[in-house]
Amino acid sequence: MIKSNYRVDRCITDDDSVVIVVKCPFCGKESVFDVDKETWYKGEQAYKNGALIQNAWPTLSPAQRELLITGMCEECWDNM
Image (tube, rainbow, N blue to C red; front, side):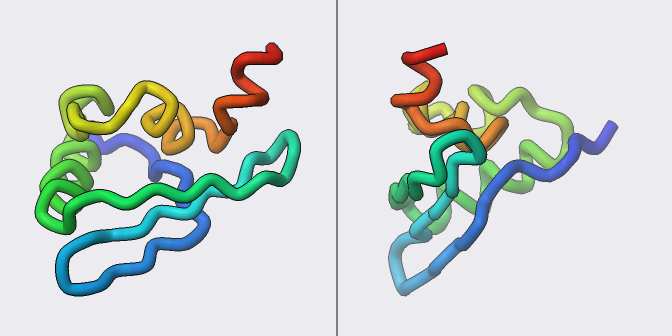
């Protein structure tokens, strides 16, 4: 089963890393974090092939993974 796409508004790559930008649908704040390029692309493939997000990107924080799933920033999540 292939999962639906994760939420990423912009993905900027350079030689070593991928910068992920996600805009919160609730407050409009942009959250930005970077991931090692190899880690990102391996995780992306695993997630698209059905892996749970915590298994696809185990080095991301729970807040970063929530951003990918829902787009919700940590502040909005804490205020729910």
